[in-house]
Amino acid sequence: MMQRLRTCLVLLLPCLFLVGMLWMQGRSLPVSSTIALPASADNWGLSFPTEGQSPVGNATVEDLAQYDAYFLGDTGKKVIYLTFDCGYENGYTETILDALKKHNAPAAFFVVGNMVETAPEIVKRMAEEGHIVGNHTNHHPDMSAISSQEAFQKELDSLAALYQEATGQELSHFYRPPQGKYSQENLRQAQALGYKTVFWSLAYVDWYVDNQPTAEQAYGKLLPRIHDGAIVLLHSTSRTNAEILDELLTKWEEMGYTFASLDELPKAGTALS
Image 1: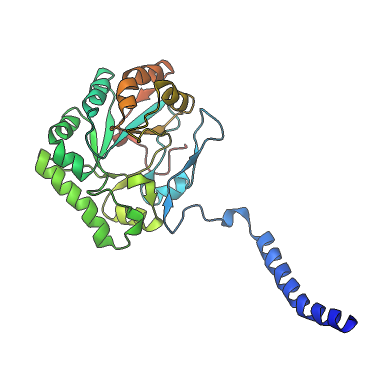
Image 2: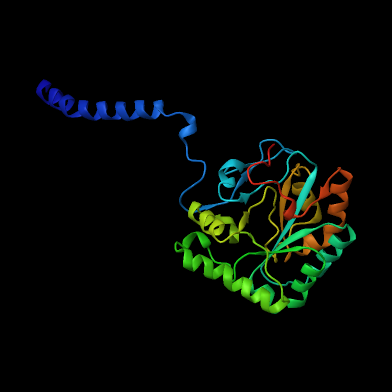
């Protein structure tokens, strides 16, 4: 019995030593060594430790700035940057445009190929009324699954060509990754093409067209969590957004906020100055 115990200990001691070494190495790693910007695919995400204050993203302002990417604007001012993702026309975009016009509020509309092809007059109206029309890719794929610069560029260039054909104008160089899926390489690819990547610092679940939130549910997310320099993501396919936008903009104005264009974003990396 004692011989078996000694044999087990001889076999076990090297394992315990190895585990101890690994634990000590982990203990010695400084907090700053954690990777803030994922090299592999990730989904853009936010947490709100304090309502009314800037949220925490899964990459920092400084991390994103290396690639001309944003999720916050000027946090030193009570300013909001309105953005809409436009996958297709669902009958609500013109009501949204009417509300923006009433409030003299600039916005950015990130369109895909389907929107340009099926609703060119609405897309033209966006540009004619002074809004930015941004690149949301032609086919709305998971761009983080695209590794080659050539394939990445094709998705953006083909959408830009459709827009040029429909409007006679050049598409802006603001880009939003479909579904917020991105990788470090995607950010580099977009930057190499002269694009600014735009994430967001405030959104809510408004994209299920058959399960729309009530106005009260929308206000419950969009009012307490608004913050200085917010880049707000809404979907133009949302019935709720069309119904509440006029009142929502009024409520934000009553809170002291004004609206700015993405063209007025501070230089990348200075949003927290």
